[in-house]
Image (cartoon, rainbow, N blue to C red):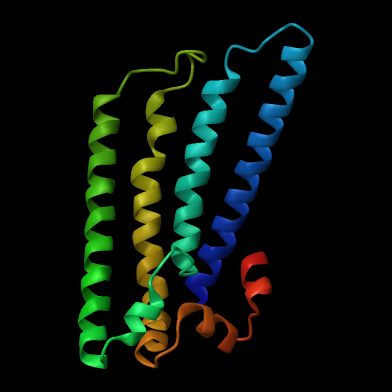
Length: 177
């Protein structure tokens, strides 16, 4: 993966870490307030939004690392010519899905224009829902950035797990960072 992919991977990693830390703080503070008898009216809405953001940004990070659930063994069992067609078809459908998701996300933003959160009326819903087209665009970018390495490894008959180890990562190291 090139420099752009590494920079995007670092940025997404730190974004996901920051979102997870923020979610943790929000939930812990909400529990403390609830135990003290003064429940916060906004925490569940914010916690839900943070969880969605973690999901979208984390999905893009997983796409960049080719860490989504796959069927490499089935793919590698195919003859090379069929494998090439299968990889191209799968990539096409994934990219098509996320392009449609980005388009639908932009439409959602138009529909929600002028609306605000229920519990925090100063926060536009368009800000919270912007993660849909942004996350989809990041997923598409991650797919394109990771595709050359993936293509090379799959055409060489290596699964993504074996390819990660061939590039100097152990399964533990790959999972951890």
